[in-house]
Amino acid sequence: MRPVYCILASFAAGFALAYGGIAAATISIAGAIALWAFAEPRASLWLATAFMVFLFVFFQQTAPLGEDLPEEFLYWGIGLAIITGGLFVAALFSSTVDWRRAKDRLARPASLAMLAILLVILASSVYGIEQGNRSFAVLRQLFGCVLLPIFYFVAVALLRTPADAARWLRAVCWAVALGSLWYVERLSLASAARGSYYREQSPLVMYSGAVAVAAVCELAAGSGVLLRFTAAAQCAVCLLATLLMGSRTALGSFLAAVAAILLVLIWRRWMLLLALAACLIPVAAGLAPYLLDRATGSRGVAGQIADRFIFPLDEDASYRGRVAQTAVVLAMVGRHPVLGAGMGSENTFVMPDGRRLKVASVDNGWGYLLLKMGFLGLAAFLALAGFLLRRGLASLGSGAEASPPARPEAASVALLGIFFYALVSFLSGPIFFHFSTAPFIAVVLGALVVSGEARAEAA
Image 1 (cartoon, rainbow, N blue to C red):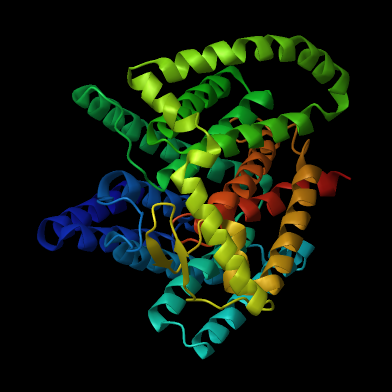
Image 2: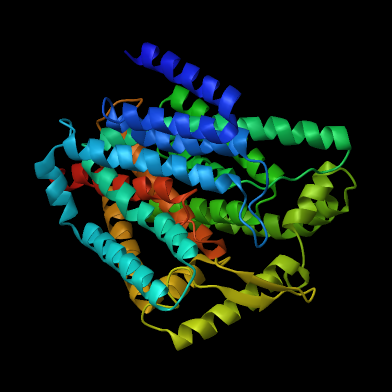
């Protein structure tokens, strides 16, 4: 059945691309994934992420920068809405869902916090309309925000065991790694042809950083030789893609998440950590000035890439613009503390070059959360993060007797690492509430809840 359906779906997408263009092809592929959800809903759960990666790689025409949204975001959103509807309905009627277990998960503190976030999202949308915010902006931001609770609840229902969560994560890692490999080849060839560093921004970079973290966790968790080799290859490809796309946030979040997860894993071996640090810190202190000078002083592509990541913070226009926007957002939140300014609200700030920008988003996830949902939304989100961190830490060590390729123990570490990564990345944008990333993060959160069950049951 699978090969036949794949062939038919490919023909439909090709026909739509030939006669209707990219938009028609996007919607036809989304429709095929939504229909497949009724046959294999868990497969469609990772296909939803693969769908977004496919769009980033092949159908992105303009970078998501500036005041105007890229034109393709409209039909990307329509396609994702079709997949979301298909998955939600399929999960409700799927015979593979253990509703007794699903109801137990939905009664857990993390799920109740997610329900609180959903209620705040709906309330802030109504408040945004009452405030006179543009209806289209309200609906667009409402759609991006509700994807988080919807995909979380779908994941909690469809992922029956920690092994299911591990299989989902493995499929997603392959999809993202292949998309990152395409970007590595594309940007490398473009840089070689130009003789200088060619940088192209894409939402894929968030996924690349997350999968790089998952790969490091796979290596640290002690899997088999084949899985270690696979994880090392995925990590190298995703990190190289991150460097070539020039995302300082993704690279910094990767380093922070890896440091956090390694500290968690060696919690009981802190003496080894102190000994290692005592040996490496003097070496690093001696080599750092030399290496930084060599990197930034190079006139080749490597030097240009280094310049992107090594710079005086107070001279960076992007950073100064974010600071200016944050000051404006906090002032608006001070006037509307409970639910913020509501969905669809806009903020106007002055860039370092004197330009005035009026935008509906915020280049800081915490600022976005406060502006759109106020302190109620912040409280619900902090509660969700706290419950999930406790659940994720409790899940470590579960499923130790599972066999490759779906070892829940390694997957539990990877899921926790991705969650650390997402929390750090939240400083640079509303990744928990943007349609291009929210479904992936939501399933990670649901999988964290599922991955802790083996440990809980064993106890």
